[in-house]
Amino acid sequence: MDPDNSTDSLTAQWLSDAEMPLANKFYRTHKFRGKARRHDPCMVIRDEHNQVIACGSLRKLTDSQLLAGVAVAEGYRGRGVARFLLKGMAEAYDESTFTFPYRHLVPFYESLGYEEVGESGLPSAIIDRFHTYRKQGRDIVLMHYQAND
Image 1: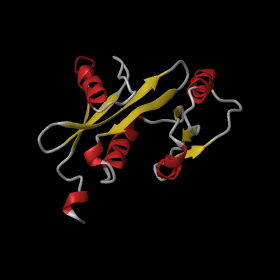
Image 2 (image 1 turned 90 degrees about the vertical axis):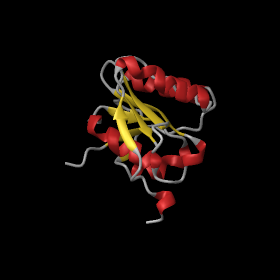
Image 3 (image 1 turned 45 degrees about the horizontal axis):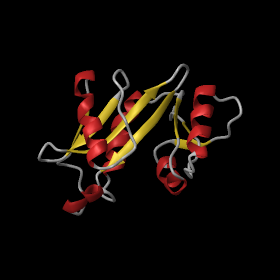
């Protein structure tokens, strides 16, 4: 494997509630829309210098959870960092996990166990949020995590 594409020197860490400002600082610094909330599981990836280079969270909703705020610092994109992050977060996924990736990212999310689904029968908290984001002009797709039993 090309050392420049290795994730060997990276570490994944779930943040405590007290550490959530680290995630929000990452989002602000890199100009991402994401926001980590206390009590929602949030994972960061750190580089060999202990700098946060990626982040993602699971937004807890009434009867489901939404994988949200997945972001990788620009200099680390295309190097397997997002895959490393999402595989690390997968320990917290279950049959109630959804995500709304941009359309061009669908094959990537499919490779991680998500599948595109219709809205029928899904929790209202997921549908309502999906419609809100679509109305904002985002070209996103509704996907549901499928556990490999």
